[in-house]
Length: 487
Ligand SMILES: Cc1cc2nc3c(=O)[nH]c(=O)nc-3n(C[C@H](O)[C@H](O)[C@H](O)COP(=O)(O)OP(=O)(O)OC[C@H]3O[C@@H](n4cnc5c(N)ncnc54)[C@H](O)[C@@H]3O)c2cc1C
Image 1 (cartoon, protein in one colour):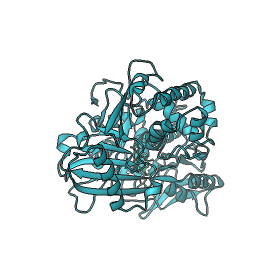
Image 2 (cartoon, protein in one colour):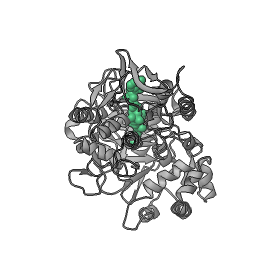
Image 3 (tube, protein in one colour):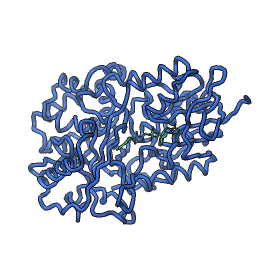
Image 4 (tube, helix red, strand yellow):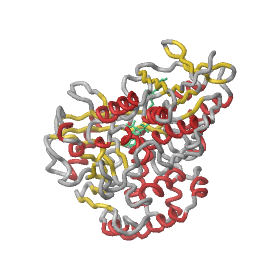
């Protein structure tokens, strides 16, 4: 079969779209194949029965440290779909007392930029806070080599070894681990958890500025991606699943779809774990592909549940956009989703929207909606007795939401070229340290693109690694950057 210079990218989530845009921007002919009818993958809204409009599968939060994701938005002329905090501000709610403490970034240099507000916060005791300083110092002193060597240690053990009190773990460390890694501290790999705290919360003073979507997820990202892919000449085929890889002389030379064979010089797999493992196996697949598939199967996923409650009016006090609920295993956070949305994007909602992202939701997958509602009402009315009545209540369960970042998971995550055979890997499960997030997916897609460009002799991209800005795209925003919205 004739050599084809085209690259086929499989999967139209953030990873696949970032990969396709990265390649097309440097002159490569790209075809993107997506099984579903829209782009954006897991960043999507769901159409529920009886609801006039789509609502997010679950709250999706971004952060200023999401440099490649924000670059992707900028290159799609979609800066307006996110607003970023001017200053890191994290409210903590003690439910029974209805008391909110705010942790905020201040003037001290990192890792101490949160120290002043943490000392004032009432949800932790002085003993908890003094112990936390020990862990922050240990994080600061830790070398990257040491961090990566802690993959087999459960994060809770590391916290205990570093003197953390039971309350500091329960109220401070564990909720952050759950929210960002979608696993609890007892199971999380210390390597991944320490990456989160070193790069995120205790990294740059602006790293943890929270970014919120100003419209529901389907209206935000999918149209912007589609427009930009079209402008850059990427051929996009939606509703066209890849059913298999086509191999010729020991190399993958294309993909199979219901429309037949599509040849390619390289095939990039930006598909979720299970779909990737399926595509990598089969009678003619190489040993390396089978090995990657086995590693992915061992990695696995953890679940997320999106709880969406609509009330007759606002629930959270004015000026409080979200809260982390102390000591609440199910109702971990409350987001004022109506408050985040632009005015024109609030139409068609059946009330004032409060969204709860239940992270590491695996233990709750078999809870019915009624039980969830009872828990939700208990928390909300204990903390805010005057909260307006609920008009509608919905629950969305996503079983395979993110990569399971348990102990030993780092070792299982593959590099882009590990499957050999001319297949390049690019999903949010790639070994790039970042958890399975919108940023992890964007970086993974760009890492796959850089691998292909490097093989093709693109000198600018040879040696590119995901901590570098993508050179063809606008810079990620620092605080106060023009064109970006802040709140
Ligand atoms: C409920 C939920 C809440 C989340 N909350 C957050 C959050 O707050 N912050 C954050 O940063 N991240 C969050 N995430 C994680 C984030 O959404 C994902 O990590 C990221 O979007 C993954 O992108 P991806 O491109 O790697 O994979 P996906 O988005 O899964 O894209 C893969 C695509 O491949 C397609 N596909 C599958 N098989 C085939 C095939 N055979 N042929 C063609 N196409 C195929 C799929 O249809 C899909 O569109 C959340 C995820 C979920 C599910």
